[in-house]
Image 1 (cartoon, rainbow, N blue to C red):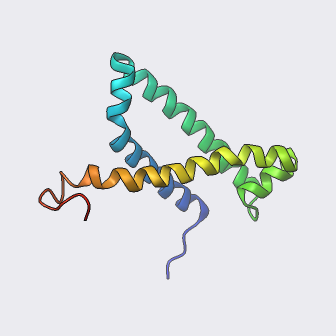
Image 2: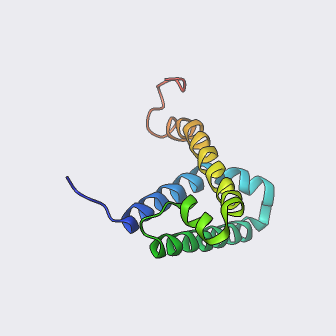
Length: 118
């Protein structure tokens, strides 16, 4: 069995998120921001990259702790939980969004004769 390092897992997750979010979210971003889409994508990507760098750096400083554990150790019990809460909500929301969005994205490309509900 092959073992993955922490940084390999992080890069796998980041790559999956980026591909999925670009593939699924590009149309709504274009509709909302119109000709300034490139600016909104650049700003959003920069914020996402900065937050990812921060979390990866902190997790490398605290190798045997989860995000919740080192957040509480650094910021206190309640503020640490408050900081982690939006992160966890975003992960659960992303999972649900991707689960609903992937069939609509892949069906016309790969399995165009298969009904979407399958």
